Image (cartoon, rainbow, N blue to C red; front, top):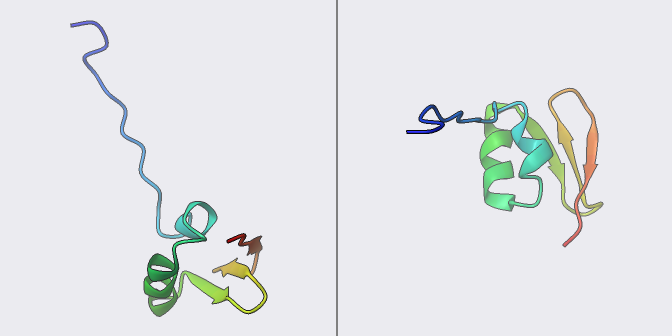
Length: 57
């Protein structure tokens, strides 16, 4: 009964490039919707505002 209330956090589509930047399939899906622009050659994923996130794999 203690802590019966659970908090579920979800990311918005705008936040997904920050957390899932190395998941190519998800980045391609988000690119089609206009939420990111992956540059796989330079290993950078840009969010919808142009902030680049370095991808290491």
